[in-house]
Length: 155
Image (tube, rainbow, N blue to C red; front, side, top):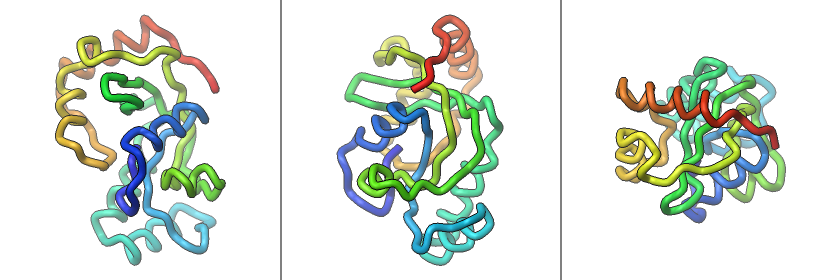
């Protein structure tokens, strides 16, 4: 969870999201949108077509879909989406740049590189700031097993 439209610490957005039970992406817009459709149109106009598609994809991701983020150099966090899209205009969201959010449950403990599925680690190693899907059957299987074994925690 790193915004594309500003420089922040590499883990600030992820730490913000995990601490508040959220998963999110950047793309700040003014004024704050009232609906997802307004947000997609505004993001497209301000940040480009790719950003608009990324927001739509993020907002449409299935509830209960797994998400991974990185909160430290060797610290991966596993969560599950559990709420609809909303625009976060709080001071903390403005500071981290994570504005488009969904509620998420996060496992209580982080995983190191050795316990995290290799395809997930590789996705983060590429250094992108995008909300990406890892297309890897083994990663999906390991992720599901880690979730069932560890159980979620609420903020």
